[in-house]
Picture 1 (cartoon, rainbow over the protein chains, first blue to last red):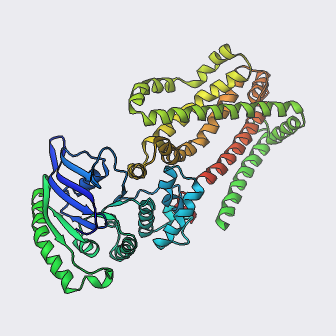
Picture 2: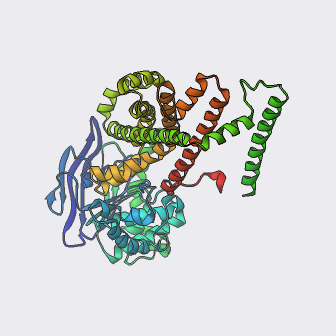
Length: 262
Length: 257
């Protein structure tokens, strides 16, 4: 395990909604400075894992420990970036970034003061006064990313944050995210259905089986050296070998998930 | 810009043509001036009014009644809308009563308010409030209910407290709805004030019209209507400015760009 401490520790976690078992048994440990990607076919309960780590969902069975302590109520160490657009349309980019600080009771001026460098970090200097509708999809994602990271959560949770973007914008987002994470490593759980994305970004890729009652079917360490060059990485032999290895686990699950959908 | 001035020119031309036809019709004896007094007579009457201080007192009173019923109605309606919007239980309990009350033709409450509150300001404001309140309430209620759930979830994940949610998420979201109802509300407030004045009072524009009607003075009634229209248009323009100030964050409608 990279990092000294374990940030997230799920043991035998089962998640049910009434009679429906979404996740049957999940073991997942994420180190303090570790980047873990979770991949799996659609409907395998990837998002429910993040909701469990945040404390929004209580597992029907099993243990959730955050930095060694059992999780009770909402997790105050985590920051959550949603898949869909969650910016307030009536606030400017900088006010959206500083929103969490205002919720903490900081003054609007202080929040703006601290939001501006974060906008610069995600490459949006000069866009402070723009409203969300005046930004492109990729720019809005970057605002959302800054909004989550400005709170300096020790555990960052991302639920398919870039799935709605086109390939080029997505690659740009990968570069920005990796730069930020490299500069200030935190525990990060990244949900995606895109294996390329998972291998490019993560230290470990966790593969889940097709739902319902899904479980972990693989946990592969990504040995690609860091810092990584997002644009050149995907053509290297090492990358291709890892892709094959993980796809041999994931591909079968995707087939199964197709079969049940039919 | 050119298109805009073209539109305005056409509008002015239509009004002038109508007024001219009316005026000529009266002069030629085709239109009975007892029922349809000539525009020139209306203008003369309005001029006469403007020069008397009594008229301005009437305008001032109607304006005060309008503003009061507007402010009180919006205040109560918004508060009620937020409360019921956030509490589904209370909403389900109260909804049939609200629908029932809203179904009452409000004008009929006018005489009752006169009996309860007398001929003064209060009965006018009371009628205006009952009209404005429901518009504000239904819009706020809808606005609170239709907050984007993703935006709400995101704010919650950023640890927004209940009051912060209200201030930063629910209220701004409802504002769009409340503002779109302001125009209707202003009309309602004016209507409440004038109708109540008409039903029984000693001052105000409604009183002025009622007096003219009492002596079968069509010129007075028409002049009163014209003054009222100008009054409402002026208030409307003010609402327009408020709306534009508060909704800067909204994408501008496509036809303007």
